[in-house]
Image (cartoon, rainbow, N blue to C red; front, side, top):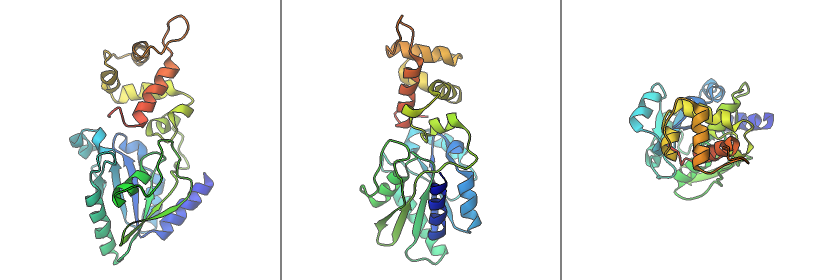
Length: 247
């Protein structure tokens, strides 16, 4: 992790403009206060890029991002928002009197940094994977004659200790989660009815009971016919991390 921070600090120093990629379903959880402080401390412009906006209600999202400016909504799966993002980058570059800006891309693992770069370029230029932490080193990618992107590995804040939150943001892959049931119970609490509706089971106040019902419905069973809650929770997290369950 120390090596990742060394790379990120170097990117902030090299870039004229920085993008922070945020998951639209989890604005608070995927903002990196430490990174934001570093960028602002260097006096560099920071653009908040809210990815996966197709997975949420836009009106609700607008309320959640109040105070984040400048902010651009994008969807890498629907190819939405990239013209506006490119325009925003050029506006910030013009303010700094930079003709060919170098744009650093920062954010948690698996929020879609490389996918945003590909969206700006219009084709796959940065390698992507559903596995968190896929980008291991800095990549320089030209997305237009005037804009050079700098992709970086995803990083955690140094003081980050929310292991469940890291699973929900996708920073920790569902297959590697140590407490998948805890993560799903938080999902059920913070997004009431969303998970149950997806699996077509009755919403209930007891998260453990809801998890069990989903396990029974999916036929994820242990010996004796009891629901396998670990397998069920990992399945739910897989769908959540891949964006198949909307927030």
